[in-house]
Length: 237
Image (cartoon, rainbow, N blue to C red; front, side, top):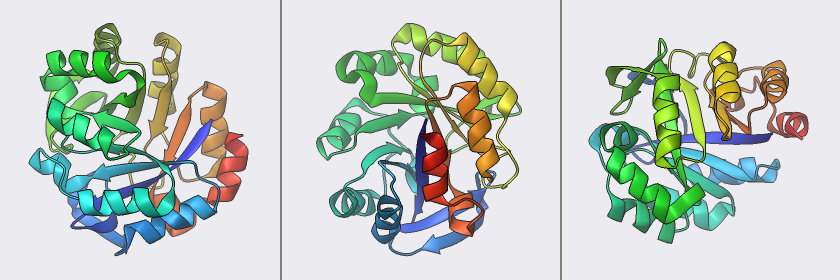
């Protein structure tokens, strides 16, 4: 299981939100590249980046910081937030992003998703961001009536080869992941699942590994010291 540290970018800073609420923000660093280097030095191979401004505004807005992270850290980067056009996805991949995460565009433009999956294969990941079991879009600010499992099954038919599942109500809360939904996704889908949201103890990582996820994304717990990245990576194996 790959343990993946997370960096959320807003106005060029490294921040964390509480349950995706833009009004409940904590700034953890004004130099995201330095934060990425810290995670790299502790053994991380991948970095999960969310462009919060991009997610809210519909186009990437923190690319200066993202490009600096790629250049300075040497980490493999997966990026989400405001990627809603084919040309944008192509440009990001050319800039060295390893995986593109689609959320809003995957829900609202399945034709685009299908085309991107055909063109870029495993470089395309869909983010299943859910509140109370229903998908949320536009930077988690707009709820839908779409069930997580329903959407994921439709996405697999369109060619999606990997999902990142985030329980919004768990995100940034230091509680625990939504193990029930994770178990359901792993058991029903024949593609890799990466879990995010609420991971705050190493025991959570052990349980997620037992459930069979491909990866676990850790955000706030790394910044508060509740989880030690080296220990987490050792558990992931």
